[in-house]
Image 1 (cartoon, protein in one colour):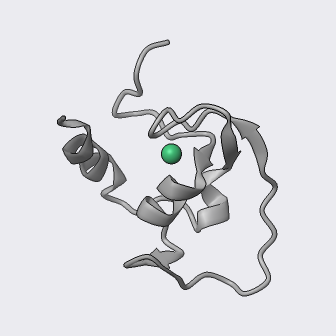
Image 2 (cartoon, rainbow, N blue to C red):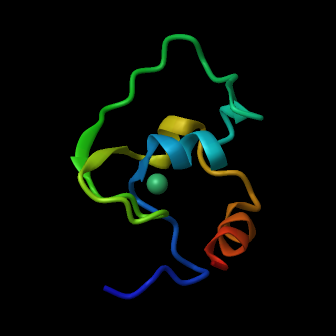
Length: 78
Ligand SMILES: [Zn+2]
C-alpha cells in the first residue's frame, strides 16, 4: 500500500486521529453535537495506520481540520 498523497482524504480514521485532527475537538475537548452517533468498525486507520482499532469516517469527527495534512506531515518526521 502506498502512503496517502496530498489529494487523498482518509476514508476511515481512529479515535486518536479524530480527536487530534477533527473539527469537533478543540485542544482535546469534544465540542461537537451532543447526540451524534458514529458507526465504528474494526479496521486500519488511514492516518496513523494503526491496525485492528475502531475506526469511523472523518465526518463523525466533524471532518478534518483544514491543515490536517501539514499537522500529520509534522508528526511523520520521526
Ligand atoms: Zn489514527
